[in-house]
Length: 411
Image (cartoon, rainbow, N blue to C red):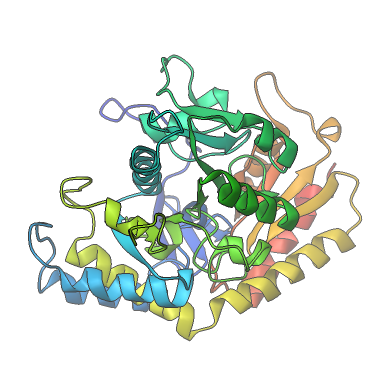
C-alpha cells in the first residue's frame, strides 16, 4: 500500500502480499490467491522455487557483486546458455537490470549502427520505427519508443527519433521508412497493448524490408521470451525462420530476481568483415549492477531449468488447454482469446460490463477476480491477461479457471 514514504506511482490493489509458494500467494490477512499474473510474466518458475532460492543463496555466500571492470564467470556461463539454447544464433550479450534498460541498450546499438552505416549523403541514421500499442519501458528512451500516449503525459519533449505505425500493417512500415531510419523494433506479442500477436507474414515482411533498406530488426522479448510463448523466444513461435539483429529480454529469465539483457548478432554488416556485435566496444555502454555474480547465477539456474524441464512445450500445451476451456464456456462477455503459449488475453465485450467513470472493463473484471481469489492483470482497456507460471500445476490451473468462469458468467 502507498504511504507517506513511497511515491504513489502505482495504482495498487487494496491488499499487501506477504508470501508466495508455487502458483499461490497469500496476503497479510491470510487470504490465498491463485496467481495468473506471476509478477507480470516474471516468476516463470513460480514463487520461491527451490531451483531459484538455492542458487541465489549459494551464490550470495560466495560473491554477490563485482565491478564490470573485472571478469565475471557467471556472465559467461549465462550468456552461453542464452545464445546456444534460446536465441540460437551467433551473437553476444550485455547484461542489465530490467527490460527498459535492455531496450535502451538496443536503441543505442541502432544509433551506433546508423553512424557506421550512414545515409547516402553521409548523415547518420538514428530513427527507429516502432508500433502503436507497443510497450518498451518507462525510461526516457524506452518511453519514447513506446506507442502509447498515456504513459507520456507531461514528460515531453520526448526523445527524438521514433515513428509509431499501425501494428501488422506492412504498407504503413514501408511508407514510414526514410533516409534517417536505422531500425525496426517490435514485440512478437504486444503484452501491455492488449495481447496482440504479430502475424507471421508481417514479421517476415519486416525482415525483408530490413534487408532491402539496410536496417536492424530488433525484437523486444522482455515479456514474450524464455518459453512464455511456447517456444524458447517469442518470435520463434511466429516465424522461426526470421533472424533478428538484436533481442532484448528480462522478466522470466530471472524467475523473480531483477535481471535483463540484450543480445546483438555477430552477422557481418559491411565489406570489411565487421560483426554487428563488435560496434559496442569498451566505453559504449555500461552498468554498475548489470550482470552481477548474484543476478547471473540466479538467472542461469532459471534458464537451465526452463530447458531441462521442457517448459516451452508445456507452455504451448497449457496455453491450448486454457484457450479451449475458455471458448467452450460460450459466454457472451468473452469476445475471444488471443496470444501464444502462456501469454494469453481474454477479449471482453465491454458493453456488458458496468464500468465506473474513468475505469475500464478489464479493470473491473480483474478486481472481481481478485476478490474471488484469482490474480490477473489488464492488458489495455478491454483485455484480461493470463500469464501464470510456466510450472503451474494443472490442478491449480483448473482451480483458477473455475474462478474465472464463475466471474465471467455474471455478465
